[in-house]
Structures are given as C-alpha cells and as structure tokens.
Image (cartoon, rainbow, N blue to C red; front, side):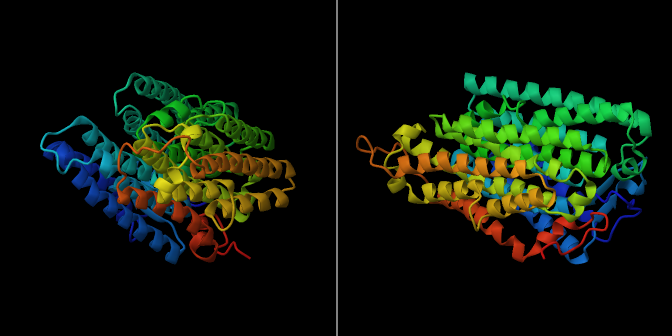
Length: 507
C-alpha cells in the first residue's frame, strides 16, 4: 500500500484481487453444500486456481511497476473499502499460495476423503480450514483499511485454531484453547487501538490515515495496543507460550500450515502498521525495543530448542527463534528512508518467505518420521536416514536454510540484514544474527547426526510413507534453497508501490 498518494480508481486488473479472496470462499460454501467427502476435491481445484491468480497479480505488478487496486462498490474511502496489492503483497501472496498447495498435496495421505463412503469430521475440517486460511491470508495482504484487516485476522484465527486439535486429544484441546486465548487477547487489543485511531482521525483507510496521522497520546496508545496484540498473535517472545504446544501437538500438515503461513499474517500487519499507516512515527527507542524482543526470541528460542527431546518440539521452538529475525527489520529501518532504500525490508520479507518454505518442509519431514517410527524422540532416530533418505534430506535442506548457509534464501535474507547492520552502524544486531545461526546449526547437526547413526536395535517401521509426501516435503525444501537465486531475478518487485522506491536495489 503506497503511503504517499491515494489510489483514486480501480486499476485495469484490480478485479483479480477480489477473485483472490472469493475463490476460497466459494470453495468453503461448496464444501458445505456438497458435503465433506467433496471438500478435498474442491480444495484440489480452487487452491491451485488461487495460486494461478496470485502469479498473475505478481506478474502484473512486476511488469507494470505499479500497485493493483480495486475500489469495492466504487465507493471511495473513507466511506468505501480499497483493495490494493503492492510489491510486498504480491510476493507474499505467491509464496503462501505455493506453500499451501504443497501442504495440500502432503495432507492427502492423512486427510484424504475421496475413497471414503462416509463423511468424517477431520478431513472436512482440515480442507475447509485450509481454504479459509488461504482466503484470510490474501485478505490480509491486500486489504486497504484497518478494520478490514481486523476481520481478516479474526477469520485467520478461527480457521487456524481448529487445526491444532483435529485429533481430539486432551493435550491438543488444551493447546488449542491456550492459542485461542492469546489470539483473542491480541484481537481485543488490536480492536481497541483501531477504535482510538478512528476516533482521532475519522478514517481507517491506510492511505488517508498515513496522510493525517501525527504523534499524540491517543495515537501512541493505539499503536502500542495494536502492536502488543499483534505480538501475541505472532508469538513474539515473551508472548510465545502458546506456540510450541500448538505447533508440536497438531498433525504434521496442520503444523506446517500454522508455522509456515499463519504467523506471517499478523507479522505482515505489523509491517503495514508502522511503515504504511504510521510512517516515520516509530522512534529509535521503540525500534530498539522491538529489536531487543526479536533478539531475545532468537537466543532463547534456539537455546530451548537445543534442549528438546522430541523432534516436533524442537522445530516448534525453532519457529519461536526464527520469528525473532523478522523483527530485526524495525531497528534497522527505524527511519522510513532506510526501509525504502536499504536492505532491511527486503531481507526481512525474504526471511519470512524462506522460513515458510523451510519450516513447512521440516514439519512435514518430522511428521513422516513419526508416522514411520511411531515416535519422534531425537535420541532414537538412529537409522532413519537410511530408511527415509529423501525425508531426512528435505529436513537437512530446510535446516541449512534456517542456518543461513549459501545459496539458500535464508542466506540471502540474513546477508541483507547484515548489510543493513553495517549501513546503519548497528553492529550488535550482527552479533545476534551470527549467534542465532550457530545455535541453529547445533540442533540441526544433532538431529542429522542421530538420524545417520546406527540404531541401538533393529529398526522397525510402523507404516510405509507415500512417496508423494516425501516429494512434497523435498519440493518445499528445494524451494527454500532456490530462493537464494532471486537476487538474479524479480526481487525488485518488493519495492513496487513504495514511495519513490528504486526498482533496482541490487547494485
């Protein structure tokens, strides 16, 4: 969403933005009308169709070097609602759509309903919620006012929580309830802040708000409430307590969705809030505080991950740590000019995308290990690398991306963040980034060394793993590696729609 000039009319391809939201809604309605047995087939058609729409929107924005917009009902803001897709939006739309589609392929083995003659609860819920998450994420990426973003966040929350407790076990129900409480607390704080802003400026449109907003007590209170609420939804340390049990206890496909996709929605909104709604109002002290929280997440999350005995819990705490990197863009881009012209925004958003692909692959791999062995105890993984070489290769590639080794997307993201630390003379964040990479490499090495070691007793596999599940996990892992090559391609699309942003950042 451009922060400097208002979009006055629907662009030629603006209707595609409506289609990106409507397609998942159509899928949900058809699933209820036709029944749960058809939910997977409906999702199998409409989710790839949504990916196609996202790719078209991406190409339109990239080639035109302009944002796409749609004025709903032709009512101009502040009375109407604007949908807008800038560079940040289109990049996230494509990345999340790819991840969701590959998760859908992986989930067929666990939530397939095509051969079932009687409708069951779990497959129906999973596919409907997956389509709801797809629609809610698109709505977050392209919404042009703060209240529509609130609605999208609530849709995302109520679609994500049921995925935690699909198996109905007591511990997963408890984890889902904790997740719901944190999410509702975040929603309340966000809504109160939104009301304060509306009372102060008479609009919730992002473009209009950015032109009117100024530093005053009501604005500061609203921004603080909204930010803390979004921190809770994103699971930023120390508001992360809900994340490990929720992500570790959910089925593998659901864990992949929650970690790779869902937490990115609230983070994306924090970026919108501080750099589009309130450009230039984030003080240096406030930016440093956010960065300190991110640094604490990196160190604490990785240290706790090192102490885990279960593979999925290790990956869940790794998510807590990786989320911390996303918030380092705030101290590195406290001045809006740094955000627009420097590497901080590019590195942060590339980190979000790389984490999505790598972490989804790792959760999938962990799920396949659990299905094969009947457990995911790290100390008892001996021999699994020989039994499931493709699965462990996918896990290893995902880990390499999280560490930040070349040529992965994680390497490019962290390199850009390191360049930003040099450009802004904030060397202490470089120490955090490097320390986080070393800690990540430690637990990735522990898991891989255990998996490639000899088993303490003859290895017995409880179930055969479908090859297409391994291929889906490996595909996402390879994508996390190939993201390192975007420096040679369309990475400049992230600057589309930024005020006076240069189209070629790579010099």
